[in-house]
Length: 570
Image 1 (cartoon, rainbow, N blue to C red):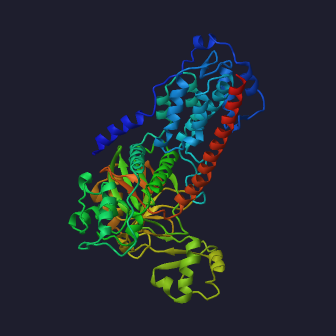
Image 2: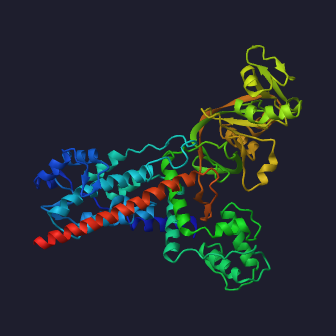
Image 3: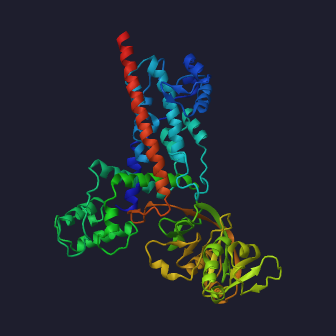
């Protein structure tokens, strides 16, 4: 399916679970009814629970109903309108948007809808409105209520959405349900394509899930084994076969090799066309796990700024990839190296202001302490031979020192008296250029003198900064977009002189962590959770979702007893 077909299918499929419903809440409609005094009494009281359901948005409910003079939204003269059933159906289908229907008490609400009466009508009035506020908030801000990753390196929510105002517009009847949903969700093709990928994975789940491949040795071209049939079926399910067709042969042929290479490329694995241990692990990852992974990454798009900028850079640390977008279109894409485990590249957004050609490197104290000073102690002369100099922190003349006593090299002593700097040159760790977006984390993009690391599939090797594979192309593209000549940029590199060049227009830089995305060909990509952010989010899901499901089952049991008691009195 090509991109335009995917987008068209997405609009139709997502639209099927939304609604153009607009509440009839005009002045005439409200004035035709009397206030519900019991509803008013409850909302003006300090109570926060209805039939065992803890209301999460009591103050917002009070505002909505006070504005309506305590006229119910979902019933007229004690009878449900058609609207609440339609809304509950949409909440029941919220999994298509990566949300958990149990968060909105959909089974409880459906039970009340099927037991019309003064008891259930008033309960539904409050719980349905409260659930909609929760639903709107989840669409705008994510479903766990927590950072979508490990908070130790995930710095702040970037997207700001006026959820309250949009929700009030819906309850006033100013916008339809679908319009409210569209305003709350990210306006991003990446987000929309992930929604479609989520729907496709739900379809696989409904069809019984992925075929698993039995344990055993590596499957490779030429192998004849019953497990080859399992491999064929698994790759057909994920559409790695062109057209989705796979034969039933148990012989590992070239068509299977090509399909496996497609799978490996989508999962950031070594594309060797053989099903070894790492590839088999990815193949045997359940569709339920992939669904959760997509849901987590949908949340991450909900945290990014709504407007990334007509010109911007996105670095996906989990995918080891950087994209440059100019005038709304991807202009450049390249591999990157990111922070290794325990020295993670933080997740944040900032603006690139300038770049420095042929830079020197002022070594952070932490890197001097953990990496360079131990090397000098083990191999005296290491710093000098690698073009490092020590500058006195107290001597304003910046006098360079090259020899030290062992006592001076003790990290706390050295860092108190000196700072390390590496001179510009071919062996400089920053390479030929660095791209600066000043931030509190001292993170930036730069060249590197360790080009060989780009050949690896897992490129988490830096101390936190992002190393780009083709810094010359990035510098040329950014500066030529501002009117510089290609020759002028080449001269800056060739001069061997350290020189800063400011950008006339700052370029937003978004450092993200996407372990699931859809590429330009329409293929869903997955990556390993190198920093444990997915695990952190999954712990929230695994704690929260079973609790919600258990709570709803308990409420349904209670309600069943209440309804039987009411029935026996009639």
